[in-house]
Length: 113
Image 1 (tube, rainbow, N blue to C red):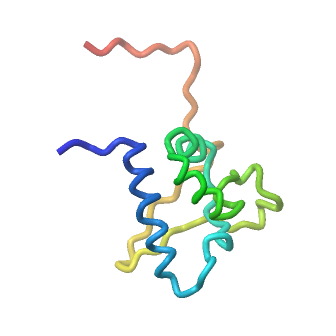
Image 2: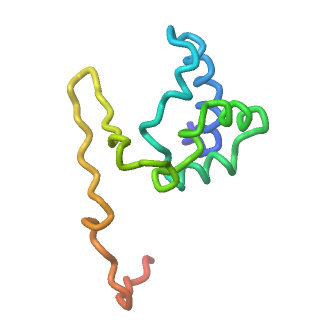
Image 3: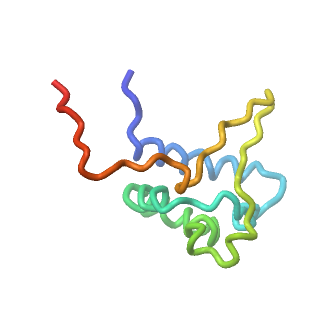
């Protein structure tokens, strides 16, 4: 069995999400979702592989589904998204960009044979 490609996963998401939203007791919930705001990489991925039908659905989800935190008004007021799991598992904290190790320029790694 092959690993699915990123476009395959996007198409699967856009097949399942309308079904999930149609079963949601609160209609039109998608436009009220603000957190998590998508990253630029996520938006670029979606833009590069959605079909016309998926793009129309994506556009109808609301503004927060199409903008990054940097583009969102008052983005500091939007809480960081931390998923909650029924078994109590908590994902490890993601370090901020300033805390991540920096790669020093000029250092070369040996070639892999």
